[in-house]
Length: 442
Length: 149
Image (cartoon, rainbow over all chains, first blue to last red; front, top):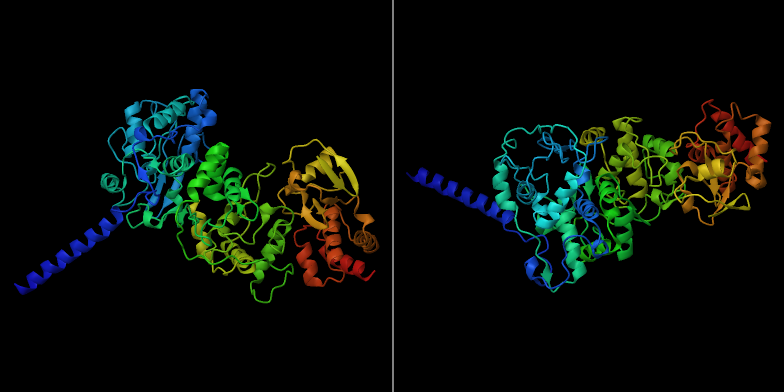
């Protein structure tokens, strides 16, 4: 009898503990609850509506406005496979529990969304529910898109329906048990999708509210830049403290002065977002490079300014990153770096553009010193850009070749470790096995 | 757009993002600078911008501004460049020659910055210049010969 009572007590304690942990994850502040003022329904908001297209495009035709909105939400990056047709899906995302492929968004009636009604499209984007009633995985950021207005979502649908239908069947994901149980996602949605439209904050400026709509609803920046909790929901208590996207570190974009963007002048931020590079700040690459190329670079000046206004209001959140190192010496030989393989590769492949000082031989695009990626002890983004390169040769945008096929895992690990030791504050310890794992991310 | 090349001013009507190499070769017809790989990996396109050796195939012309460009056509007018060219002739460094404009530009930049380079400094400065004929040993000897001159 006694043992039984103890067991019941223990079981009860476990249930309470699990409930407390899940409750802690579920009952968390909203994405912009940090802001002073009172959120109101859109219809009750007295300022200029923060939704839709910016004032510059108020009189543009429906097609232009639809295209702008789909750029704002950056649907193209995920729903286009490498070398595939735009919006036809098929891009793989490698997750710890399997690979998921994005679906076809072109209006093909059989393989795309050609037969979808407006209500079905709204249901998908706001609630994460497919026309057949099954639930999407939150890899699709509907918990952000749920804040988009019906009008904006339907303008995006109208744009998609104006595209040429592409007949391309969706690929099933390769998730294993228990993640392959889609019905579980209904519970996830109940817990983590607020399922309500954007609520502007009275007491904040019109630019701030527009910025919040762009960042939180359409741009879904937090999906990469906010860390996730155990249940794969965004941890809003650590808002913008940095996350991971396809093996790239999506760095802290809170206003922390060292770890985040708190010391970036507003102009630097605006130029970086619109052009993908600001002096001394490095070049947006990997998934952020795509976000700039496919979305941010197409936004109007007023919208970029609104994003900057909003980002600079987000509270500082430390994430324990080291302070960036200062300038590096011009002399090739450094006594404190014992890495002959890394040095040989750097001098043969990198120094022509990046220079021994790391300041860039002739263009600031090639700067290494002072960058967050080079001062990140994990060296994840250093390895990623060596593997993937950036841009295409012979185009105006900054270009770096991919070295994935030129060098072994051991060589790439060596040169990444050489770069962080020479130009960063904390030398990395990337192993060949790490490089092999990074190769699989792409 | 105004460019200062080998001491002379040139006015060119080109997009900002055109690689400097294309401007030099295709627009201005100065074909001494060579196109090799096009991705800053071989060094054949090396020129100087304010005395620093850079790969012109990867430098958008709009980023040059008022900085002085020196190409293989003008390098003989600099003291380091003249010494390198003389050493190259005396030691017959060149084999097929395609990479040599780039080799000479990198070597001249090195010698101007470091009049007595040791083997490590030579390796570090020249590592980005490939030579398919394998004249590396004579290149190193040529640089030392020029340093003694």
